[in-house]
Length: 214
Ligand code: B12
Image 1 (spheres, rainbow, N blue to C red):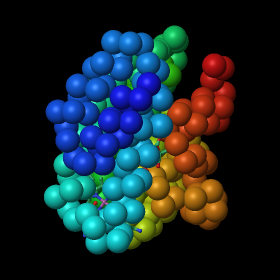
Image 2: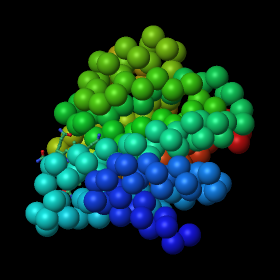
Image 3: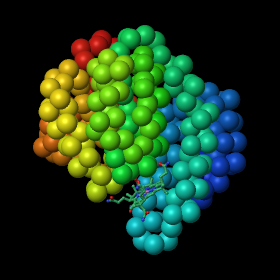
């Protein structure tokens, strides 16, 4: 499928119209949406990040690439959600921690959780520990998924876990962490229940830890 490389290039070059039209074509040809995401779009975003580090790309380019990926994701999301084979009636809270506005990975995780049968309440970006707690209590959630893309906002994950401990509700929920700079070691250190480097594996881990059979 040679033309799929154009999806990679459209995200890399920040061209939403092309990203959307290639995605439409690929979906019409029944190409697996997970392939479109992982093999083409995430790969392109990684390259965007590398170019940003080398001062070849600046914020406007990052924004256009994000727009291209989001446009394509909007077409893909209903299919991921439609994957759902079981309604497990467990509420999952998703959010990007305080100070951080990156939401593409978190949104992908949300879509895959829904696809996995979870009821997802997304708190968006820049989420404070108190907002996480409030949402868990309001929705009787059993799973909290925090995302961070900046090394400077990662400590917000620890603060959130600590606030859950102080409120004596830490053991009522499974707390997972993820996002490009997060590692297994960091997750362990801050007392999270788990970490995965991609959203699909995150859903598998969440089910495992909650004792939900596939
Ligand atoms: C797009 C982008 C932006 C966009 C974000 C748009 C949006 N709506 O998200 C904009 C332009 C806003 C932006 C802003 C900034 N950015 Co930026 N950004 C990126 C970029 C290029 C791509 C991120 C992305 O979407 N990746 C694709 C998604 C799918 O990947 P992901 O989020 O990692 O998610 C995957 C996994 O991590 C996992 N996952 C994610 N969350 C979770 C949670 C759980 C529980 C689990 C299990 C799994 C999981 O699932 C996904 C895959 O399946 C990255 C580079 C990179 N390679 O990460 C830089 C990057 C993250 N940004 C960076 C920086 C520095 C910034 C700014 C500070 C720049 C500035 N000077 O203003 C600001 C910060 C703004 C803020 N306060 O948040 C740096 C961070 C460096 C660091 N070490 O902290 C990076 C790494 C670029 C770089 N190489 O320097 N950025």
